[in-house]
Image (tube, rainbow, N blue to C red; front, side, top):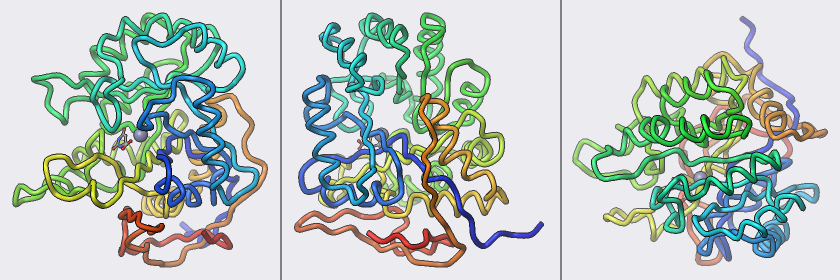
Length: 351
Ligand code: DOR
Ligand code: ZN
C-alpha cells in the first residue's frame, strides 16, 4: 500500500466541545474555530443553558472570540426535570437550539441540574421527536453499586433502551462512546449515531489509574477510558466501519488548579489544540487516512441534516510537538498530548 503524506479534506465540524466562560473561553475558543466549520458548544456552563436568551448570549460570546468569520456555533438545550416546555418548544422551532442534551444527575462537570428520573423528561423528548431535533446523551448511569467502568453499559441497558423503545423516531447521539458495548449498540439500532473522542482511542485505564494508586488528573475524564478491547473497538468504529460515527472531541478544558491531584479533580481532557491532527495520527496508524474525511466532515452533517462544509483543509505528515500548556492572562490549561509528538500537522493555519 502506498502511504499518503498529504491529504485534503472537507472542512471538519466538531459535534461536542466545551468552550466554558470568561477568560477560559477566550483561551480555548481560537483552537476550535481555527479548523472547524461548526461546533456544538455544550450547555453545561456554571448556570446551565436552558433558555433561548442564554443560548444567544453564549453563542455571541464564543463567536466574538473565534478566529474564523464563517465559524458557526450550535447549542443544545440542557435538559432539566422542570424545563419550561413552551419556551423549550419555541426555542427549538426558532432554531435557538440544535437539540437537547441529557446529563444524568451528577455524572460529570456541572451536571447537578441533570436528570435523576428519566420519565420526568419524557414530555421534553416528545417535543424533540415531533420537532425532529436531536437528543444528545451523556450515557452513564451513576448510582451506588454501579462501578465507574460499567456506567455506560448500565445506562444503555436501563435507560437508553427505554428511550429508544418509547421514542422510536427520535434521533439520538450517544456522545463520547467509550466501550465496545456502546459501539455495538449504536451499530445495531436505528436513528442513533455516536461521537468518538481522540482520547478514548489513545488511552486505557492504565493511563489514568496508575500503579502507585495515583490518578493522572490530565487523563481523567467522563466517561473514563476503558480497556484495550474497548479502545480497539472504538478505533475500528471510527476508522473502518464508520457509517454511524463522527467527530466529537469532548475537548473539556479545566484550569490547572482544578487538575491538582486531590479527591476533587475535575473530569475533562483539553484536546482542541491538536484535535484534527490527533485524529489524522490515529487514522494513519489504522491505515485508514482515506476514511478520515467521512468521519470528520461528512457523517456528522448527514446525521444532523445539514450541508457539508464547502471549504477544505490540508494536512501533511510531519512531526511536531504539541505545546505543553495553553496560557491566557492568568489562565493555564494543560494540553492533551502536551510535549508529545504527533505525525500529522494542519497546513497554513496558525492560532
Ligand atoms: O470529562 C468530561 N468533562 N466529560 C464530560 O462529559 C464533561 C466534561 C466537562 O464539562 O468537564
Ligand atoms: Zn462533554
